[in-house]
Image (cartoon, rainbow, N blue to C red; front, side, top):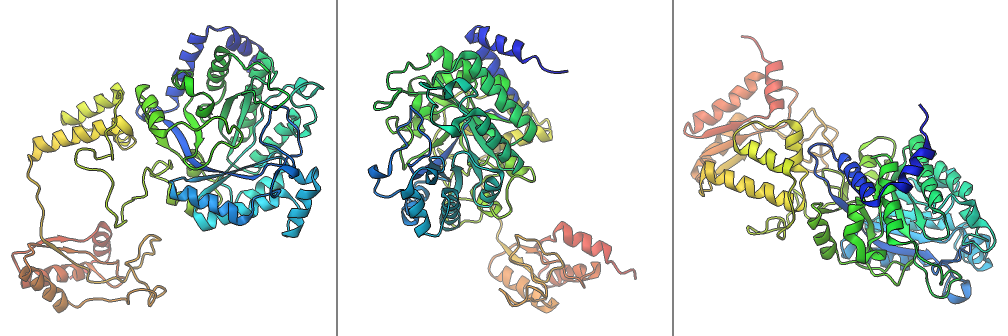
Length: 562
């Protein structure tokens, strides 16, 4: 049955705002399922304004300028890398490349600068710089390069984890003389919609959005949201939709234009959450709305976009980024812990066909188990001290309400009742105050079960062989004929050496040995039994912790009947 968008638009425009916002919050909550806790996300980024030249002349923009006002038409590669490295030092994970639309179409200075360096188009230089940032700093590029063709989106795919192109509006009126997009052919709605569709065909995770208050009518705002909905339903490529409020800037033709009212802006935010599929996040820029952060949360947003600890918002330089600690406190009061994400959203990391293979290692280095951003540089296997203390195991105390469903899961666990898979996964997914509640519940259970005594065992590992028929990509221990000589040599200890190591373990105070090795192709069940006998004959008092499931399976399958 075809949807009646006319009726939908009427409802979105006439429903009382508080009711519409409540509906949007309900829709946001449904995105996270029964147990996965809701959260707010943001991307720690560094802003790289590759060029401020633009082929268009939007009448509200202060970012675009002319060659005479710039030292050079483009940032040099060294300047780009200097900004990116500062971002790495500050803990950023995203490198946002922002620039005007194809300035070489308008300015000879841009064409000459590019040609001197072997480039014919701005987008080719963008790709080159993005690749260098990716390879030399590890930051994940997000590219806002304006209207592009499908082959250009495909060209960016191996070096850009995500891309962006604001739709802004679907109003043709805004192209007329005296309106904000007059003289800006790249802002024609059909041109931008075609480019966004091309990004979808190219399978590039994409950010888009609408700009509110530039002369569009209320029904046109809803039409833009519906157009983005339809694009995503056809291609599935929209990660997020930004609902951005226009802020008049001195020195522009629209410096005296009236901004959208707060109620009108919040209505569009709530409508975006209601109209868009649940898989698409709704974002609003916090630096343009510092006085209404909580209201935006109540209107249904779930993301704050990119926030930089290093660079200002070059498009809105008058609006500083909020402090993360303050934003975190606002989110906590709303019961939504603030969580870092990557420029590519988790769904596009986990689903096939979206993340280019050349980018996957860089993404995984920065991602946690949920494909969100790691909350510190530490990870298991790193020799550095893990963050946190006994009093603040998460690094600092986290305040805020904890969802009732989490309390029910913790109560169920404390009573000794088993948890199902979804409930266990929910405990792993907690953040902020909810994660603190899990830690505190676990500590109480530990005290009840074990008291305050901490035990350990003096143990020695005996790895009797590193020869293995498996080739697990994460393993640096196992050796096969193809791996021989690259690190340690393959070995297969004889029984006397195993017994000698058991005797040495006891002499040094061990009460246990752990027996593990590779899956040797010639080992049988009898081999494993002989290893056990060698240890027990040498030192009967030793407790033996032995064999991985794969070894047990190997021994069973290759058992020799006597």
